[in-house]
Length: 505
Image (cartoon, rainbow, N blue to C red; front, side, top):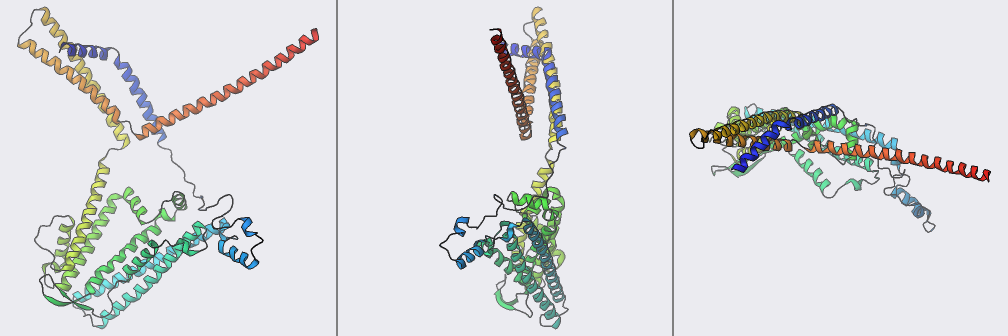
């Protein structure tokens, strides 16, 4: 115990005598470093929008090209050599960089126009489907009336146009890939089986729509009754899968895709500028707007789908009204589930399961965005750490003064012969408490200093060391050149001295 008190007194005396100057030096150094960092943080990296997307090697696009020896081989006849030239692309049209860039720009504009047609046909088909469904629900006409047949025929025509546009979209994408890689054969751009499965899946998703007439099939309901049910509700709900084209439409018209520098840097770094990339960029820039829009879209779409299922397959149920459907969708989306109302059909249950899964995913995104927004930025961390260190310095100084004060009080009490008693024990306890507070403030300050060092600080230190090494290398080079000049002058002086000696002889 006596050793601990002696150590505390020694630490307090050292703190009061000489540590303040070093702390001020460190604080001024840190403030200067922070000022330099803020001064440097305003610099930006200027992207070069003129980076060409070419695969040029040694001045030639030598992919799928034969060597000069194989082309000029005397064993091959003229027709075979001509076929080989046409096959392997010796006179490749993509050797011209200007043609390649112009061709790529033309294909990108064509793909943008095709996506516009896809978006228009998809939205037209969905609008016609909504009109036909709402008119049937409100009793304006039946499935066999002319109005329903006309609207469904329009849906079929828009679906056919959409499928044709999708085929042209993928053909244009293959042509863009051929242009980027200087390929002559389209089969090189087809990655089997993923490319074929992607095209087939997109065609199947966009092919689903309610056909003219009333298509019914026998099925069992939730109550176990066997009845004939219409497939139009299922086809109408699955037709909403075409809304993925909205994401495609947003991608082709977003500035990240239309900007030449973004496309060039993405291609050079093997980063695909697609829907996922644009979604991540929007979530980084406007996360609140994106989440609110996504939640509202899920609420209205799933509420309509649930209401359609209940009206088609269980008329008269409480979920048949749009407000009850919205309430059920909301409590399912938020994973609450009060149990006051619930789906009465298998179709409604399926929509509720999809809604719950979307709610879980959206909630996870919301938590991530909130955690990111509540986290302190780097300047805020610097300010907080600096203020915390100042506060801890004050606490440590006050504790050190209390240690000295209570130690002197105990020394006076000992001189007076007060070796025991409540008063001495109280002063002794305050001395130990002051020593504990002083050491805790020191440890906490050290932990704050260690936590404030991040990757950016380490990178700055590495850059400073690199600059110092470069400066030393430059000075060393200058010194070597001066030494060489001195040696040259000494050599000339030796020659002159030798000449003088020879003349005197």
